[in-house]
Amino acid sequence: MLAEVLTQVALVIGILLPVSVLVFIGRERLVRTRAEWRDRLRTNAPVIAVLLVVLLINRVARQTAPKLSREIGVHLTATFYNVEGEFILLFKSVETPELTAYFASVYVFGYTFLLIFPVIAYFMLSDTRIFRRLLTAYALNYAIGLVLYILIIAYGPRNVMPAELTERMLYDTNPQYQYLTREVNTNTNVFPSLHTSLSATVAAFASMTRSAYPKWFPIAVVLGASVALSTMYLGIHWGIDVAAGLVLAATCVVLSDKLVDRWSLSDLFGDRLERLSDRLPWLHREE
Image: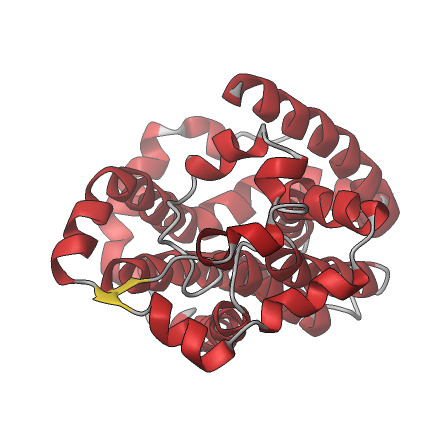
């Protein structure tokens, strides 16, 4: 079943990305990237490596973090419920089959597209700093989120109020998606909402680059807001989780600006990078 869901996601994203490249990026940047991609790759390689390491750690941690969390984590489900009450049930008053289908699709397909497309779009920019900041912000979101998932044990509304939410829970409307979300987190991983924090991060970068990609900015904002709302509409996250996700996004965006270019990677790892470059002669091959 997981393979089937991944195939569906790959097909949808495989259609959306080429169309988006043509609509938002344009031929001129594609041509320029074809001539400059090796230089950009050399410049961006360290931050790409950092993000890959963080993602690998997150994947490994899915096997060990739940046990560690049970030992040192603080249980806050009751606290969240006492503070927030039944706020999530307000979404039931606007529930329709069309909205449920929309938010379920946005939660899976829209979120995946929202994370991948900016990586392509910002790599297409000659100024590599915004690309490096984006990947740094992604890495910070995942790293800080993992720490908070270990320290804070909180079950989502779908686990606390199943009777009220059962008619439009993601796993009831689209039961196949549980195989995909189970690969990402457990039912105690709700604080903060990484769907919200990463989507808000993308929207923030879209705002910063709206002069370069004016058409992308409104799409990113609408999709980002829809993803955040979908987590509550589908009973996956508390409003508190979403608010924490927004704070996390703002923190990561600010930190990415402070961290990128603060140290010279060529000074720190100059010899190693030079040796690596010598071993990869294709990086220097002229067109």
